[in-house]
Length: 95
Image (tube, rainbow, N blue to C red; front, top):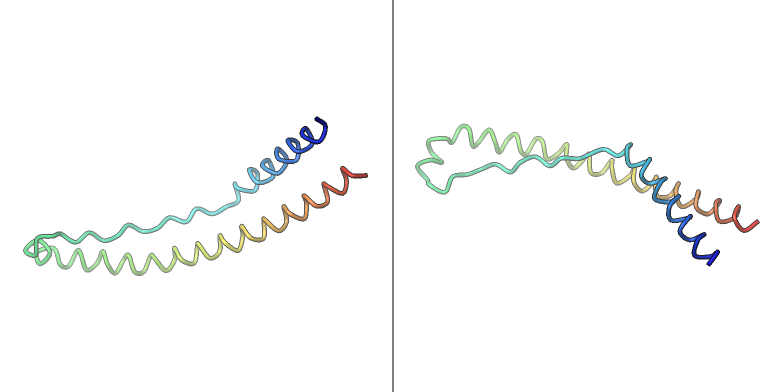
């Protein structure tokens, strides 16, 4: 019973730490895919707008990839820190 209560306490602390740290996480939003009309006449009529949409998408997707890379590094570092904190916690509880 005590062991189960300790497990719940550890889980609560673990998720509390993650919850607080999650506020530091960056939200990476993918750009919207360009729309290309299925009607060739519409595609020709709006070619300049559609071309601009593609160019905007290609420029923005690079920033999205950089954001995802940075978030992965941040999350990995946070997970390492939490793991170390958890190890220290376990050692403290055992004493």
